Length: 69
Image 1 (cartoon, rainbow, N blue to C red):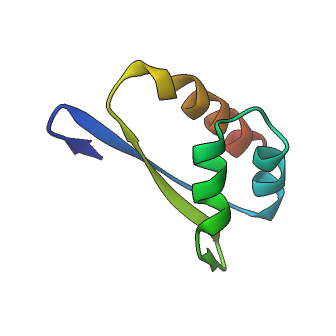
Image 2 (image 1 turned 30 degrees about the vertical axis):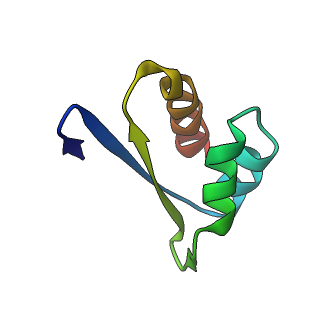
Image 3 (image 1 turned 135 degrees about the horizontal axis):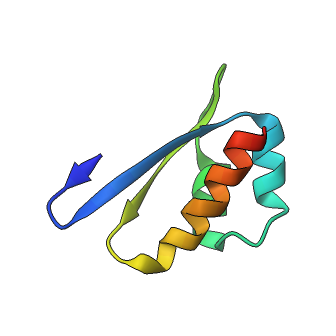
């Protein structure tokens, strides 16, 4: 979702993907947000604010996990 000088990356992860993420080397901030997200039938949804390139590695890994699960 585009914003002024940044964007939000939105994901919904099922239980299998959630478990892979919690066992991964993705940042603690993203893991904490995912763990505290409300669980719906389709999974846990999060939005990650991207204001610089530092979080892009984690987003890439999240995409890999999402596509594999």
